[in-house]
Length: 252
Image 1: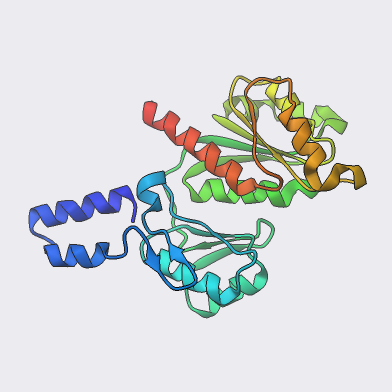
Image 2: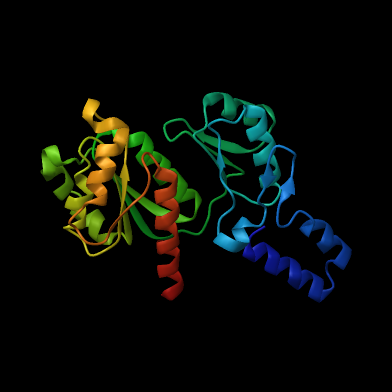
């Protein structure tokens, strides 16, 4: 349950359209629903503005299905991240309305169009970084943001990035996804006057150490205004960008 749904429920009780008992029934699973192997956080949208997402890696398809089904009782646009095709198949077999993005490895359960606030730009250094970039983009869209994409704009051909300068300067927040030596966020940070969220990926040859080289390079960026999330964490970058974007919308 999110803020708007809770506000509407309280108004219905105050106006006599809903009984106190019915309201209690609808609120009985706050702040969480205990389904034995998971305590499903049905209160998170009230606290953080977005429902709990389900990280599928390490869970069985049956466990993911049980969790998202419970969340979908309360929320639209429930995200299941790092979802293998088997997870999407289990959700489809259960008849839950959903959309599966195989490249982003995300299932959106009960997908609904949302009011979009200002622009988040998602930029990837290489084509191999696109799955992580798409995780960020799809997540940001599900959270109610307008998203612009600029892919394969790495430092080996900076003219490709400069061709996207109009997108960078229009965006409220920029997510930059890069593997290898992780230089792209510093370049972008030196071109714009807005927050840059850097996402290192595990793409690269041996001494990239599974993304550690890119992570350290981003943490040591000389460009101001660059923050860094964990390796391959497109979801986390999108959540941070969405919070900034929605805060800008509230201020305006």
